[in-house]
Image (cartoon, rainbow, N blue to C red; front, side, top):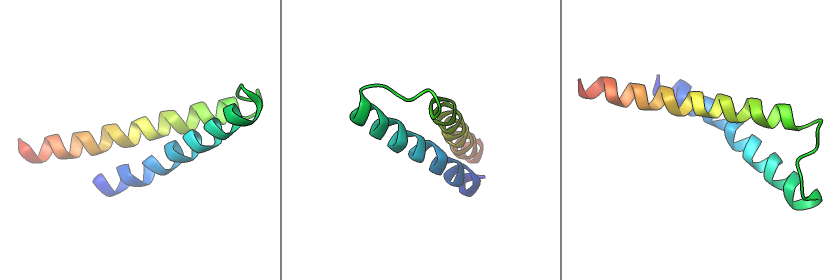
Length: 60
């Protein structure tokens, strides 16, 4: 579960990189890349939730 959560963190990292680069270049996120950045962030949050659930489940 932790391994799958770490794999899900990669799209979130890419979304941060591409979204940040878009903001630095143009001052705002382009409308064609915004849904992909949002999707990547949601998947990254899911990865964080999986890692958190795996760690919390081991302590119980």
